[in-house]
Length: 145
Image (cartoon, rainbow, N blue to C red):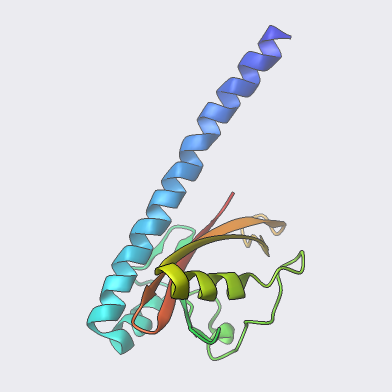
């Protein structure tokens, strides 16, 4: 029994820093992208939509919505750009984009958890996106928990 508790504790300690690092990386990417959007919105959106751009770090990437829930930049799935996604739910039926938009409008930033297909695993998993208001956009990056 003690060995199981020790093993579980070690596993938890080894996994937690990964999530913390991804959260920090996502936050840093969003802050950098938000500053770029504030400086030159159109140029920043082009860089955000570039899969080889500076706002892609490994599996983390920045994406952006206008405040009506229209995707305006996405480096991985260009087919989403121009689509109004506010009423499109996650795998559990949650309208998470409404939470993103209302959060950035109310306080300037938001962290929203939702279920989304992880392209790496191919499975629906919990994803947490940190978003920040910049100009008239919600600039976001998310990581899988």
